[in-house]
Image 1 (cartoon, rainbow, N blue to C red):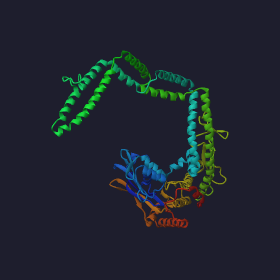
Image 2: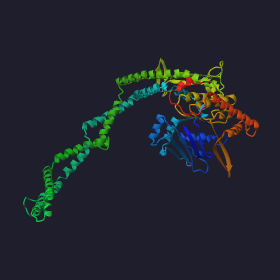
Image 3: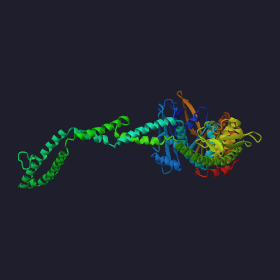
Image 4: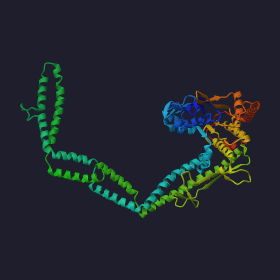
Length: 606
């Protein structure tokens, strides 16, 4: 859960500390006071896109710091440890995001600098932010399919993963078959060129590193006279002109004379040097032998030189056409063989590829059917759960239907898949189209949600969906940004009641303008602004019970200055407290991450 969040230099907020309740925390304030900056701060802390325009004027940067407590999920702890950060002994970790006035953003986790994506991955496991934009996204077919997949959990996720794995291979085969069929002439020409090149290379039979070795041989054969002179002079210096010749004793003769003199010296120090000279004599003798062998094999061989030059010319023909050196030529040949293996446009090869495509299509259709069946099963349960939630949100006659049907393949669809005798489009999320329909009352037709619901009703449908999905998700902290827009009266009270019940198993943070919702909170925060020296500043205050009465009275059409307004606010608070006491107080702020759907079926839906 998110224990506290500090915001500095963000929008109109100069410096504010939000201490959040483990149950239900509400944030209120006058229009323009900066309530939305609380949600903006959460978006930043969740790795959202940074905007320099949100940095407070005069501040070098905006900073949002959040302290999470009781982080226990395996995926969350893996993300933290993978970033090199530590979780303290109480299961807590601090996340920080800063945005400079120049737009540059930095992220820290557990005191360590991390990529912004790490905060996004962690936030995905720890909190979910829902705003009015979610109502717009709910109109998209992909979002409606995502709703049912979230609700179904592993029942859809497992077969969908298998479907995607087979689909990837099927796509590859379909694309390759289409390419071979459509580009058969071009591929045949390319194959001929590759075969010609391979024929030239195989005819020469180059060996890795051969060109460098030939270059050294040519240097040696072309300079044989100079090499013989150098080696002969070196051998003379080492071994001498003839054995025992005092005029040209060589290095070995001189070392031998030095050994004799040291061996008969009267001083032991000199005699101890003699063995070291003996070692030097052995080494120099070996050099002399090697020089002799070199001279014996250094005969001039013009014929051999011509052979080596001819071989070098053969290799240069290849290196001029295919690569810079022989090793590169060999690499080109290997690549050409691999490319040729995919360029077979013969009828046999195409038939074999088509058979593989059909085999994969059959397997893929089986997986697609399993995904569809799992969605159909989940659809009935999801529709019932949302309908039950709407009954508790002053929409007792409304009914939700969730339809799951196959999406027909368009003409020319490259990824048309035959499933149960029908050609359907095999997309990355399966072959299904999911649509949420709303029947406003028993006699009304079932219409798409965004067509059948008013603005306030759409807010309640969105909240009902989130309440249902919250029991199927493992995210602990839920944030609602004015999802009660367009709602009032009894419906507003029911929304507050629903959020309070949701707070029994989750930490709930709500930004609202409705006093009926705020009255159900366990902790009430107010964002208020003031002006000093021409500069507007906003801060966040935790309200005591008596202060809550004044704030609720203000929210009741600005009635904070009247006895009637305060009496109404006190009555609202008392009613909310009585409801929470009767239904079990919120604030547990924790639950296990599993068994969500059982909780949906077993909850009180009134």
